Every structure is written in C-alpha cells, then in structure tokens.
Length: 490
Image (cartoon, rainbow, N blue to C red; front, side, top):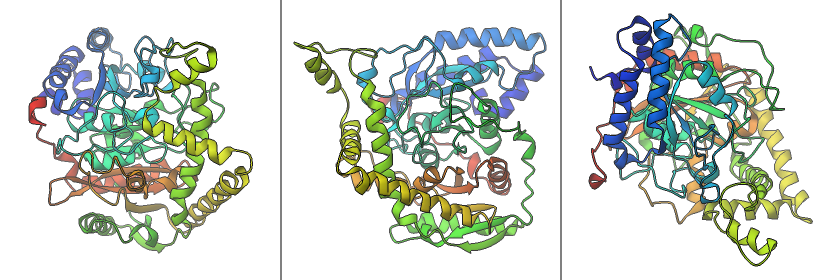
C-alpha cells in the first residue's frame, strides 16, 4: 500500500511499531504534493526541507522510545495561522513577505506533540470567503472535480486532506470555514466551542467568531488532531480554562438513547434534493443505531445571515485597520503618510474591501444602534434558540451546505449567492456552540455531501462519538478522489 493512503492514526501506529519512518512518510507526502498540487493549488508554501529535518528529528526520538501524540506525522497549517520563520500571508498581498517571529499557540501545540509541518495551505483573503477564490495568490480546486471549488475559507486545508496531500490539517472557522469545505471535499471538519482552542497567533478576522478547527480523513484522525491543540492559554483572554478531556477515548460508537434534534428551519426551499435525501438517510442510520430522533425548531435561524454579515464585517473593520504599510507586509510609498497608508491599503482584495466598508458603515455614528446594536440583540435570540434546543436534545443534525461544490467562477460576481453557501453553518458561530461535518453520501456528479452535527457548548465529545458511530456504519469516508497529475488537466 502507498504510505500516503494511510490515515493519521494508521501512520502513527506504524511509526510507533517501527514499520516505517517519519522521513519516508514525509518524503512520500512531499513527492505526492509535487506530483498533484499543481492541479489543485492547495498549498501556498511547501516547507519541504524544514519538514524533512523535522521528520529526521522525529525518527531519532521514535528510536529512543518517545510516544508523543503526533510524533513524526506530517500535518498542514492554514496560512492564516502564524508560523515562526515561515511566511504567513492570510491569502493577502497586504501581508506578502510577512514572516512571524513566533508560532501561534496551535502551532506550538503541534510541535510539542511531535508533528511534522509540511507547509501553509491556501485560504480566502483574511478567511473571508466560501470558495477559496478570494485568495490573492491562487484559486484552490476541488480534488473530486478540479472545475469546482473546494469551499472556503479553509479550502486549501480541506483539499489537501481529501487529496492525501497531508494526514491532517488545521483551519479556522468564523462562519463555517472548516465545516463547509469539509463537506465539499468529503472529509471530516471540526469547529470546536469558541474558546476551547486558543486564537493567539491566528490572524484575526472577526474576534468573537473566529475559532481554529481540525480536518481529518475520518473522525478518529480529526479527533487526534483536536486533542493536541486544546488547552488553556493565558495569552488569549477568551481561552477557556476547562478540565482536560481524553477525546480519543470517547469514540465508542455507542449512541443508544442519544437524542438527535432535526430543526425544520434547515430543510428549506433551495436545498438540493440529493443533499436533503442523503442527510435524511444519514439521520435514519443514526436512528437504526439507537438514537432517538426529535423534531425541534430554531425559530430565529432566518436572521443568522444578516446578523452575521453585520457583526463579522464590523469586527473585521476594526481588526484590519492595523494593516497600514507601517508595521506589516509591503509599503507602497507616496508623498506623505496619509497617501502612503491609502496606497498600501489598496492591496486589499475586493472581498476584504467590501467587508471593511460594510463594517465601517454599521459602526458609524447614526447607524451603530440601527444596525450593529440590533444585530447583537438578534444574536442573543439565536443563541437562546440553541440553549432551549439543547434542553430537549443532545445533538442537532442538519445539512452542512444546501448544495454540493459549485463551479469555479459561478458565484464570484454574486456576493449574496456566495454568502448563502454558509446559511446552515453561520448560526453555530453566533451561538458559540461546537459542530462538525462528515461525509454522508455523494450526488449524481460524484461530489461529496456533508452531514452537520451540532453540539452544546463544550460538548465536542458528544458530537465526535455520534459522528464516529455513523462513520463506522457507513463507508463514505473510505472513498478517495482520482487526481489529475498536472495543471494541464484542469
């Protein structure tokens, strides 16, 4: 078997048993990236020499009997997460050439666990997008059909994991940016509870919504990666100081008596029939496994989209004000300071500019109460919907996206249509709950369909075990895309 076909857990076990080496696995993964990624463009920066050195070091430690959680396992990191000594651009020209002098908390955790970091994956600029078409550098292609998007904004990480170009990957999820690309690419993507994973060292988009998440080929892989990056961090004021949990140990597959809520608001006009059919079949499978299916309502779901697109741009307007050509990235010189700042900020792409303008308008004098203030109140209503729902059920099951992956270019000129791609994922971020997407079928075009499982605050163990139970009863996660070997086949 090709070593790149092994799952993260299988490789970890093989490394510990001495059946292979980290250097061999890392070199095989790099060779595969060189062969296939010209067609996919999942990576912005392949740090192959550093990765091979890390792999050699890991092999020495393995030979000494060390058993760290990810020792010797090659992992990819979204290019919005700071990595010491490695360019971190957030997919934007305004950060081109920025090399952080420190690692983000989650990268520190990866290194402490012994992971080998392969490189930085592509992202929509400042994580603003649902297709990875907003990257200032390159468009990532879906491994299942290179004429289609991989989802966004963590499309590079999702595509890399689906294409067997990494054993696992980190992404970020502000409005669905882990779960939606996981759905489009047929992998498992987890968005933890807000504060469960430190945001220190993650380039900010919307600070009350951003959260680092994990991608894996299956639930166990995704869980193993999540296990490593959790933990309290005093450098992040929103980091939760909660007791340690062994998430890998909870994957029993026993869901007898689990109450699964089905919100009527998530099965609406506009959802593709094949998506709805696959998700309802997946829910039936959970029932066969012993779960109790309960019809519920989340009545304020219709407000999630407008609320999100007031709060997120408002926070982005504040966060992106720091990019002024003085402290980070390139500086486009002009006659005076004001002109220099203006000229430099022209490096922002169309989507960040759109959201900065929306956010600045919503926060401006005379409009703050009418827009941003009301959005915060509506956010509370959405959060209370989830609170009441979780008094009745343990898990909420929905489609991850109303459609499968769409064609590249199909929505770039229609921002509202693009924003609607995340209609089923936005509410979770507004409510600070946790959620994941896992494969539950394919449409007639051979494109993956995702099932979203949502859990209450700090209930990652519940949704991971429910997902694991479903996964063990199906084989969707075992399928792999057939990849083109060169960009000429795109």
